Image (cartoon, rainbow, N blue to C red):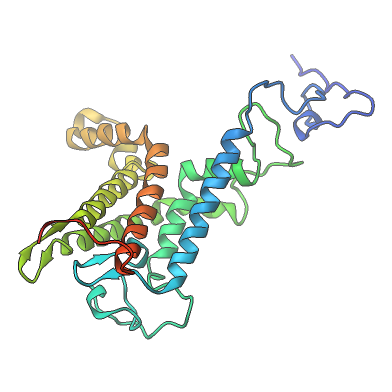
Length: 279
């Protein structure tokens, strides 16, 4: 049976790209949905844009990133490898020369973290819909005349997501080290509100990183006989549970990153005093 020919659209009507596609009926309306379908992509666009703006401002400031008294280092500046960093914040040395103004001190890690987020399966869905309207929502035609998917440059680079995952895992280890290091002072173990915030952020980052689709595939995605690999099967099932919450974890970590950085900046600037539990 052959597909019916496309029906001509209404005279003088403006048809969507979906309506112009061969084999589809000509429909005047962009969508038959009656709900406010445009709210989710709008909220996503505003949320992502606000976070990116905050991150750009804070990483370019080159100050209020380290609390020497308590050993707090914001994840936006970790690892701090430049001579521009204060010595205490450079947990892995300062092999790089001084940076000029506006260049982020954490520039070594930031491109990999950005790449991990940009190529993340959830974020791709989020910003494709919010910024490119491709498509803006389910059952809503997109305004683009043609669709090539992720088969051409630059979107074909989305396929290297698994490699960004490896880098993100290493950076999560570094963030974990920063949080643990802050617990050790000259007088021994110490604990304050900032420590709890750093630890909470690290836990959220690990949950998001491990829940990645690439991590799930590495754990057991290529196995043909789960019964022969009980450990990897168990790992796969646990990661799969986290993977079901990957979207929520993606947004949670954006929140914890910004909150952690803001708290450390406020303490470093003297605006806030850290609440101490164990000195």
